[in-house]
Image (tube, rainbow, N blue to C red; front, side):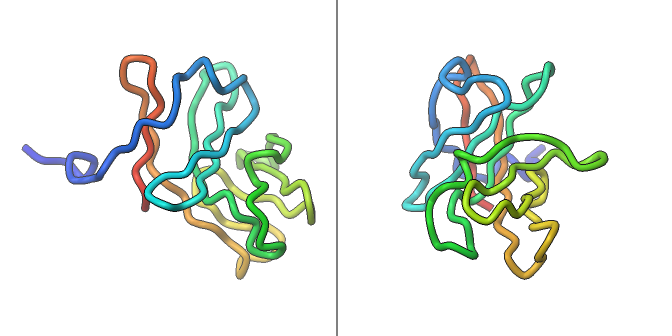
Length: 115
């Protein structure tokens, strides 16, 4: 039986240990700048576009990870807008939302599939 994740094209980005807890890294995945985050005690991984749509700069991976209510977010280091790591939604300005991408861990490697 095929699932939705079986048809995705997965790209290995780095090992899980190369992303410190509650931080992000940037990777070039199929020509797209992607920010990958490792969050919390459970060490969940999330991926969103790395380019801040308001600034046009590839900086979201350098933002501060935190939460707003139940939402896990990253604050852009430039304009301080918050992006939901699950959906890519920009909380302050939804028109500046970014894409969220599928992430999985396989044998200690972080893999990303573009949305």
